[in-house]
Image 1 (cartoon, rainbow, N blue to C red):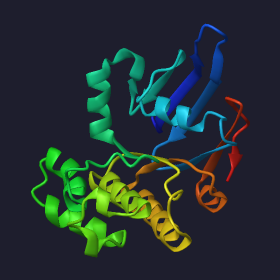
Image 2 (image 1 turned 45 degrees about the vertical axis):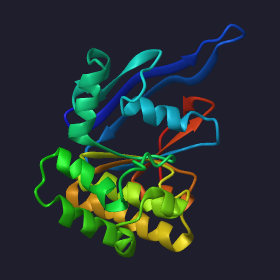
Image 3 (image 1 turned 60 degrees about the vertical axis):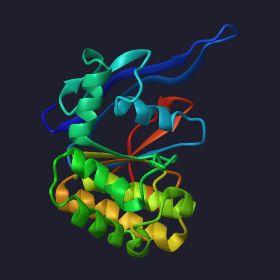
Length: 227
């Protein structure tokens, strides 16, 4: 387990209701090696985003266990899980989770300032330049298109140089050219900083760039295949 930064054992997620229980994930076990790149693929409704949330400790399974960066998430309370994420994890969500009251630059600076980085502004400006937003640093999220907001979110995720980056459809709101630029940035992060990439994606080209693909079908993990 020493080289595995994420280990999931017999994960299940069941949503209970008065009518019928809905099984979203069914007995999923996997290991993700440090510094690797993994795509989670499958049809809509197969449980991809739910699996990502469980692996990141944003949600807890109905049964099973996740070890993230060597820690058993079920043994941590909510504050401890948040602290673990802050130390090790970056996120790119479909809902960009930008702070409306902050400019693009300030949104990217925030995690750097929380880490006590004195070069927060310079680093944030550099990252926004790399995602093609050097001219938009003073704009607020409401002044940016969906694709531009996605790029701010990606720059913010890169800012703290996370050990693990979880991304849910990172190129889903982007045009082809920008999507290709973001894909290159993701794999530069993986290559240069040894960041483990865990990506939910419908983009076959992005999945093929990853070292491994995990395919979900109706909540069950099919046999791992090379992407």
